[in-house]
Length: 282
Image (cartoon, rainbow, N blue to C red; front, side, top):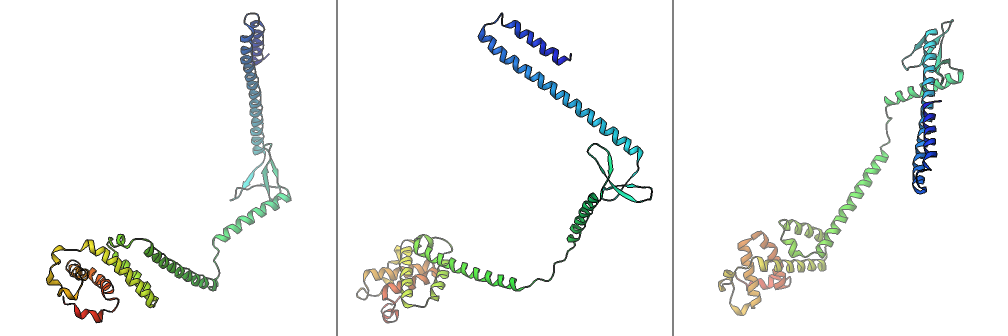
């Protein structure tokens, strides 16, 4: 009897004697534990028997390979294929069987090997393959379509700029350093649409923005001297403040003043500066 079987019999005897001592509840728990131990021992025995069989099988394969290598002489080519040289001096392909022995390849196996070699040769040939001359019509069409797509994207960006111009408060935009560039870009876009009504809307927007921004940024109390304005009957108090504001802007920021003056002229003289400018002397 093997050692594992002896251990099993020992556990069985222990279980038979334990029911006289312990209570039923305790015996039930211990029975479960001992049964699991028995299963583990049986599984261990099965694993050991399988491993012994595998070891014996591997030993047989090694012995058969060594005996075959002692009896025959094989030749190996560059691809690792083994060949047997017969009495006529011809090389016959050889393959290794599952039981560890060498056998001659049949005609079907030879054809399969030739197909494998052919596929390998074709893969090597494709590495040095040169592409033929391509038709450039499709390429030119793609380039033309790309230009159209780019033009559409530019139009979309211009439309987005117009929407942003209408949505956001221009007072906050004017506080940025690139305010002049933004206004020039928008002004050139609107100048393309040559229409008097659109021009008046643009001038009105400029007027509202410039006056609102300049009123709190460039106002100078010292500039409200009467020497900057003509006699009172010619101008209202609001017009005097606007003219004084122009002087203050020219003093502090001349570049910004050019844009403001255009808006203020629209506010004062309703796009007719030639008739009314004669009344003002700065």
